[in-house]
Image 1 (cartoon, rainbow, N blue to C red):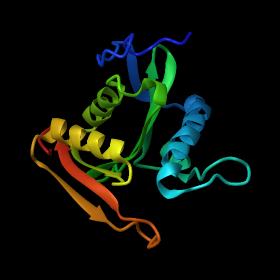
Image 2 (spheres, one colour; image 1 turned 135 degrees about the vertical axis):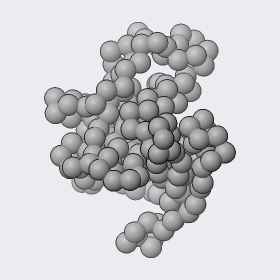
Image 3 (spheres, helix red, strand yellow; image 1 turned 120 degrees about the vertical axis):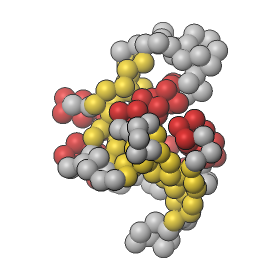
Length: 181
């Protein structure tokens, strides 16, 4: 039997949650979590995997090798529970490029705790994109923005660059922690 985050879904997250930069040794775990993430998102744009069963993974490569990026791994009770990719660490605005919590860890507060932890590591201006077609993401990211910035956040739809066939992404912008926020 696998451990739960908070026992029988009380909504109170366990104290045994770790958010840490992912190392090169963690990359295979993050790549497997990426497949789950892309599978979840495929619901909203009817995306199918490639013939080998994988999805495009350029962001994973960027997160581990590109300047200004860093990958984070989330663990609960020593087990992988999700990840985040942050870019723009060398720019005035950080972007939470990808964020994922495994289904078995959702609805117990882990997502909110890990989002807060990632934002706290990089105080300043933030932008986070999501899609209106994903109602869970809409509620979640609005809550994160409100907790981080009160009423001092904005939301706007922006076309996906080079992809007129896709619906616009929704971007939330706010400041989190520090004097620059």
